[in-house]
Image (cartoon, rainbow, N blue to C red; front, top):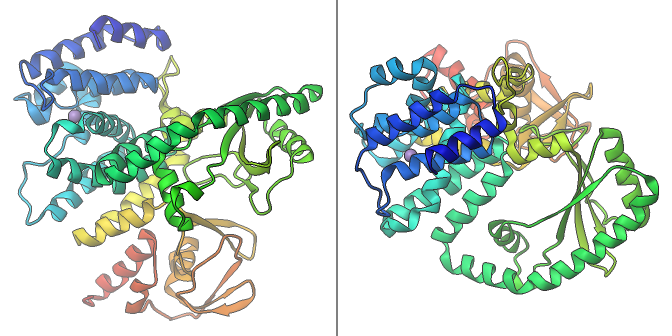
Length: 480
Ligand code: MN
């Protein structure tokens, strides 16, 4: 991307921002990387420009786009943090430092190095969420240009992308990015399956378009008289999600019914429910498919109504109904909250509150000193299958799939967790390794003076519970 194009794209959504600052960052990065080239043979700066371009797509604020241009100067050029700070100030410097890898430090093993990298990056992210947005743009571009590396390195990077970056993007509500990262990693890790699925999907394309068109006509017919504002978008599933479905259902690709995905986007929450009513009145819903993520948002802020109905030709159609604002959040996730809004910066008043879980979670992870345990916990907490469990008072706790009453107890309060002696789920006594189902109502039984047990560590799923239990033993001076 040329400097002119970049400045123009930025001015397109941030007309009042200081574009001279961005121009300076551009020139500085071009000069710092000089004649360096990437494995692809292209100029190194091409990568920096591509990262900045994605950040522009997400309409990020000035310091983030500038840091995107500069994100590799500390790692790959002689530029020092002091120099960077003198030129661009502490904010941009902090962002760049947060993104900078530490691959040069020596660790006993690759796992240790990887764990330490993640620990540092998450720590920087806790201070400033924009670090992870730059890092995701960086990883996405690296994945798009990965075929210039030898296979061993491709595989290592693809695996890390699949197990850590894609789930993190999901956790941050960046579905679009998550899907792209997964498909790029999938192509490297299991190239045969990737090619098989992508070929098959190509050949199904025409039939799908046909079905979609006929459904679109039908639904417009139904919605028109209501006068409800609504636009319809079709949705394509990622290849990797189809692959996962094959595994879940234990079926070959030919037997996978790949439901058509449709989104209905309207102006208000009330109209979401009104649309749902109309849809269900005219198309038979498939049993057990309705989920209300508007009244129960996912922890990554995602909101929508989900339902699957039977289409005009008997085919299943997955429908998501949401407002424009929910749609933006679903597309951009956390980045939607950092979008440039003009005037006094891009921060929004609810952001801090919404991001508390992220900071808390990172804090619990910090407690895990063993690199393997740290990476395991990171992966588990990023695994996005979640269950909703209720307190007897009707308060909801969102836990990872496989969570147990101990996770729930520690999610309610550390003291409740520590003194837990048993649990009632839906009024029945359960063991402490019981795995929740969504909708369970859980009551924790406590006894004063009761303390955590060592074997609890094998019954908990969440970083929070694990960290609290470990802390107890550490403070008592008991080795684990
Ligand atoms: Mn980079």
